[in-house]
Image 1 (cartoon, rainbow, N blue to C red):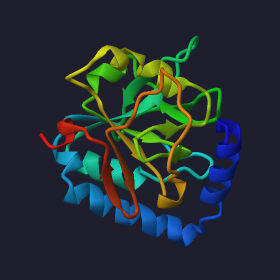
Image 2 (tube, helix red, strand yellow; image 1 turned 135 degrees about the vertical axis):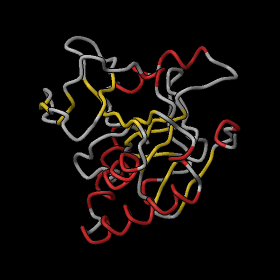
Image 3 (cartoon, one colour; image 1 turned 120 degrees about the vertical axis):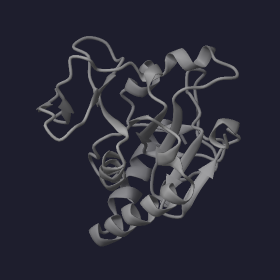
Length: 198
């Protein structure tokens, strides 16, 4: 099955999840993240604001902020696909980007390489850690620098999804960056990333 057909199928499965089940999944994923110490091992964490049925990481974002962790959201560039990450604090001013997604107004937005951990939305993931996104290529472009790193990878990449978004194998391209782990309502699944154990 090609990526377009898979996107349709997996988005339909994700969108079929009732709202109460989505809320339960977000709370359960938060407990898994805490159990695995994800918020304790990073000073700067990138999040996203869920759109179009994506897994809701806002409870995780709010807890990280209460813990004093520096939290960031994607900021689109005016040209190109490489995103920066603006810090979210109580008085952060937000604006809507060209896709209707709120993003922080931050003149000192960071590059992805300055984050320790990045929670990423996805449409699907497979048993090797490959991620199927929405198809815009923003995360691929933003993380392209990581393809040249063999031993030390930063940020650590954590996909966030419902368990029903898992497939056995996804078609992938040479520029696709595999995830270090996926967080779902059923737990945290690692993909051979020793950095997560450190």
